[in-house]
Length: 158
Image (cartoon, rainbow, N blue to C red; front, side):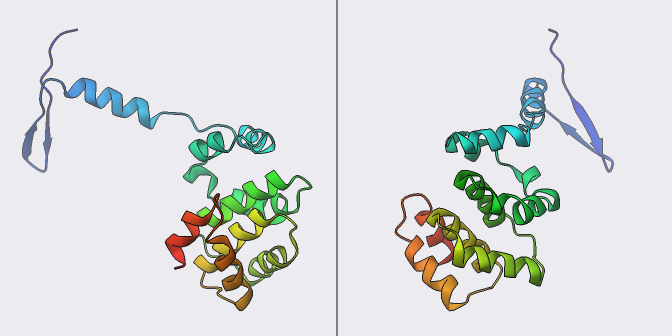
């Protein structure tokens, strides 16, 4: 490979990059092109309780309206508690504003879901969206000491 000196002119200013910039740029491009795993792979990983895989691969691309709708209409109501956990995780990671019916859905899940992790993650999702009812606050307080979500809860709730 020949040595290459890159220069780029931006707004009439020349910027000289070191000779190793080609490798650095190729490395950056490779990292940026890392493919997002298919949603089905995340679902399967959740079913198998492969949470490290889920944590490493859940990305901004799954915090979109499409997946928030899935979480609110399907995921939170799945018979598998791990799928409900994934749905609640998407909702607690997202900052997307929710409409009043969506908030009511989360409040119902907070009251009724038998799996404490789902309730904890839903409480975080509600708390982040300024829905800080006595029930949300009580569940957040309980979640603070949980080994799975306690650290996350403590970021929002002291």
